[in-house]
Length: 409
Image (cartoon, rainbow, N blue to C red):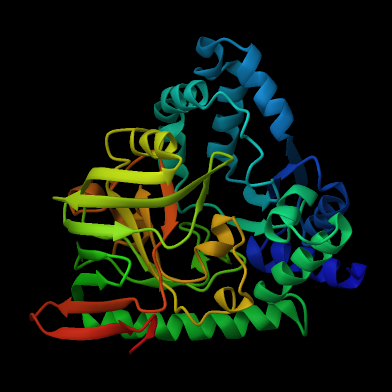
């Protein structure tokens, strides 16, 4: 891939993704397999005015070793330096960049039972930091292809061919392959905002999802919660940023306790470095009461048991089946891309920043109005070619929102 295109992509992430301002701190999380691109990204961060750029490297093999050899008690507790780091992030609100590249099967040899127990223990220890930081800092998730991930998507190509092909797919769907990436995203944002305005003007109180997989699910909505798509504004600083590159979604947080019926996943889910496939959830009074999977049922159980509210919905996202990502014909085995191929839902925490007047409300007040609060947020894909979604407004009138997988409004 041409270096000029990669520099443009790095600039998009730094200048539009997190939209770094002068003297801000930046934290980049990336895997050890991406040194070349991370060097470009660090340089772009400094060009945008960053005062300090910290790269936190990770490696699946080291993670597996840690969970093999360390005691569960040590894995389950924040030590002093971790607590200090969380407090610093809480106080300074650095820009956060997450670069995804790992092989979807990277943690297949992990002791997932131990991993699940440690994660469940850690969530309440860091939740208050996350809660108090929520909506106040700029963040962006983007992707770079590793060999393992590329070979998962393109198993019949050589390593070099697979990486090049995945690079092209990532850059094209991220609107960073041709033209001016910044301008491309400005235009895309206008389109998403217009669609969200239409949804907000409908004053919807319920969505009814149906398709031939067997999905038949009704989800309640909240009167004071908006639909949002594209860029967001950080509370306090008023800085506009793009949290997901790519993104095709218009999303909202539904009413906790108001989901009835069954929903079937339309794509596999990569969760904690392993694949869950052929799964479904049955909801009653907003909570998952039954579930199953052809692959990864134990992982589903872990996902639902992160805390007491991980089994409630936190997000409804609308994406047309005829989307740029879906039109590649690829299964990316990566939630950032697959969730933006067509409609998805998310179990776990919702988005307090979608509540009207949230800047003057406490988290307790927001959750009392119906937005779910959890230490977990896991997106799973439900959109199909025959997905039909009917919305019910505040006067009981029906509106066809999606017909045969695509927008009807």
